[in-house]
Length: 306
Image 1 (cartoon, rainbow, N blue to C red):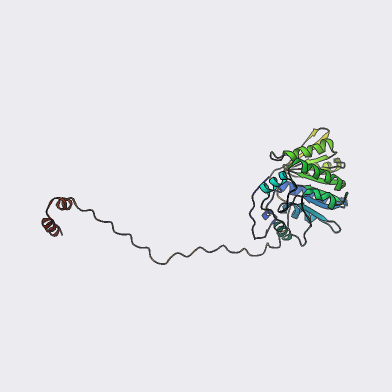
Image 2: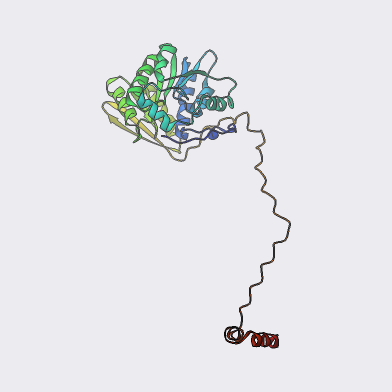
């Protein structure tokens, strides 16, 4: 999904003020998966591959615990590794800069995450294998890059860690779809659930987390749940029915007064000029006298008519 975003100097006041694509259903699911890991005592770092303006990164960072590291990776305004990726970045993310991301992130958190500026291929050399409990993949939509990102996620996750693949079924991202379902069919990835935009999966046992998720959803009235079986996998499909986003604290700028809009220019106090009087059209008698009579008689007639 591509949009054009203009850089602004006003920092965000609320999470919704941060540009990006992070639907309410996915906010609910991120919050649930991360809380469930914490309640189960699952330890591990957090990773986001492709962060754009920081909306989902800001949200995820609330679940960072002491002793854990949060790493985000993005090209920002850096050089893409190949022509196709360069064209994709120019078309979809031309306004993205690291300074915009950092401004947005620091509006909600005291410290920045660990930032890797470069292609996602640098992640496996910078993040330790088996160190992550939650990985969000939302970088390039090109098959070759997504395939590598999924492979890296498998190596970086703890045994029951969660991977989230964005844009796995959008009409403009067939490369993501192919890479995602290839991982399911041939790479051991077990789908846990599908939202409108994201696939949630694990290389561990999906059944316990699926059962807990369906139990949670069945207690809600704002989410539609359906299941089906495909290629031996139980597919849980979720769709929002007017869901409200989880509560999220406002930014540090929430109470800063808005700068007033420039006042309109004052109207002039001088009265408007009176419209010019219309010119009187000469009468028919005057026109005939002017055209036919000698000037001496014309002047006499004019004098007599006044």
